[in-house]
Length: 173
Length: 173
DNA sequence: GATATTTGATATGGTCCATAACAATTATCA
DNA sequence: TGATAATTGTTATGGACCATATCAAATATC
Image: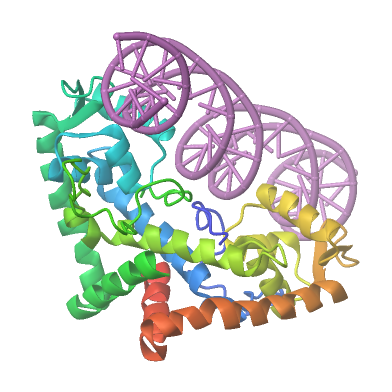
């Protein structure tokens, strides 16, 4: 719904420190009225999602993990020995697009492709030792810097309610 | 966080009608365990957002409006007479990317660019009569087919709580 | 009136998403 | 058994969206 990532970089933030009032005769631009937009589910969902991803990337800067990469590592750790098709499809990634992603993770020695002996077409996925170590550190960062922020903002109960509602939407909408 | 749009087209849905059980000796692939992934804010946020946009597009199929286009029409209706820079920036759209978007809406006679007499650099944006009519129909479709679905799924109170929490995240995270 | 800034626009590159097609391997079944 | 179909990972490719640099015209600044 329209929200880009560098939106706040340049000029107009809500941080209109000494501006908001028309001190002199310099007619200010006047912020636009959002109106019904602020009640639109899709609009607010997209804005929230961008903010959360942005924060995730900052938290993971030291490990250089994107949300998608983190989800792959999490899923492979929980389900070692599955092939590319299985992992990709449960994450909603199309097989062709999963190739470059794995190339990346494999080149960084975070996970490995192993030719299956049962079915020599498929590649079995496993985390390397380094992959496990990195994932463990990633989990700690996410918990302490990322998810913790939600608790500060919404409180534990609301945080759980939010996750529950979003899951419901993701699965039943 | 990885969720594509054609994820459910091909094979593995939760709709494993007569499959789930290993009736014969045809060892089934066994669904993967999501594990901690289902508790990750970013993951569930992204999945929900994709589902909501998908549904939005279906509801708007007759009007051919994307979520981004709908948000532009809503904002211009609420704030007629503003220029491209102002509208684009409050939506988080970068000016260069807003040009093609407006070209589209203008070519469909939904909104118009008018050279400002005050500042001949800027284009003032307004909805055309057709634009107002289309937006009115769009609002009805969104309310009846889209937002109503949230009420069915979560209930009125939870729906409002959800929007509130997402707004808070969008603004304060 | 010279210089800087703003506005809309173009060009361009990056990332992500989606489809078609291919070789290697395996499954199906006549 | 052997011909045909299906699956797996892969490449190539195109589209949508996002981001930056740059430009000419118009305006602001001093």
